[in-house]
Image (cartoon, rainbow, N blue to C red; front, side, top):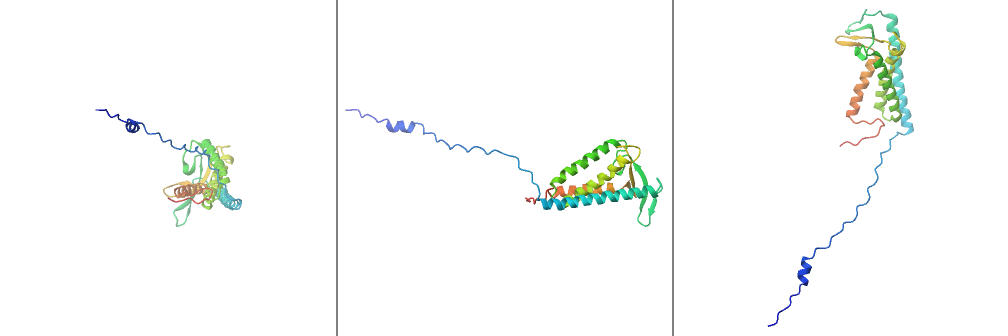
Length: 206
C-alpha cells in the first residue's frame, strides 16, 4: 500500500503572515502662523478716531472748566445745595484716587493714570468700533482731567490733589472726570460681555 504524500502548500499559505498594509504617509503638517492683526479701513478709522478724540476733548474741557469755576467761587467744606435735588456742591481736594480711595498713594495713582492714558492711545490705533470709540474717549478724557490736577495743582508735581465737588448723599464726593471714568468702566464691561471687538469686526455668535 503506497503512502499518499500530503501537499503542505495550502497549510503553509494559511499559516504564513499576511502582508503588512502600509498606510499612506500623512501629508506634512502645515506650518502655523499667527493671524495677522486686523486694521480697519482708513475711512472707518478716521471717523472712529474723530469720535474718540472729540469725546475725550469734551470730557476734558468740561472737567477742567467746572474745576476752575468751583475753585474760584466756592470755599472748602462750605456746601452749596442744589435746590430740590439732594445734590450739593462741596469743594474738597482729594490726594487719592476716584471717590477718595487711597489717599496715601498719590504718586502711585499718578503713575497708574499715566499708564492708562498710554494704553488707551496705543489701543486707539486699531479702533474701528463706534461703541469702543465712545468708551475710550470717556476713559481718556477722565484720565487726562485728573492727571492734569496731579501735575499742575498743589502741593507739587505728580502729587497734586484732585478737585472734587459733586456731593450726593451716601456717596463719596466726585468730579466730572471720576464720573466719566466710571461710565467708561461700565461700558467696557458691557462691550466685553457682548464680545464687541475693538476693531469693529463682526463676531460669529455660537
